Length: 153
Image (cartoon, rainbow, N blue to C red; front, side, top):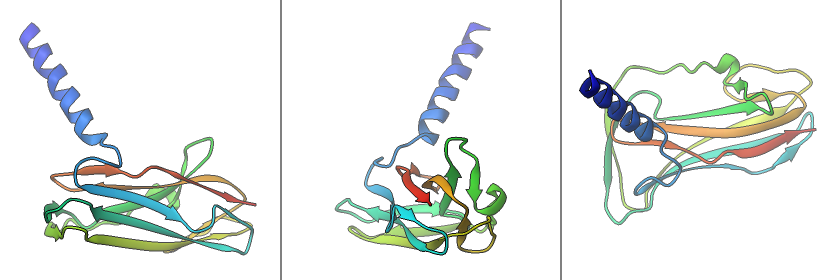
């Protein structure tokens, strides 16, 4: 019984450590940038999410239909407000990709300040304080970008 408990504890520890990788795990780096930290109702900001290979060699990985997942959470509740309802639509398609040394994959979307929340490809946010975040998932790597603050006034 003790051996089983010890094995379960080790398996849980390794699983949690693998899933909680920070933004600087190995040669791949995941960054989030918002061009304007404060916007008003009717204004827009551009969010850029970059997956970069900062290593000297190509890096290959296997990923599904949602390689990079951006999301926005309201502060201080932590409720995910983008994508609307906290739901992503991803395919189950697996693909093998290689990111060359110094190469990057970029994803951009806009955030618009509005009187009410909206839906669609771009984020529409009411007045408030938010954290813009992103994750990268592959069979080989798990990355989470450092959150960036965004305020809609």
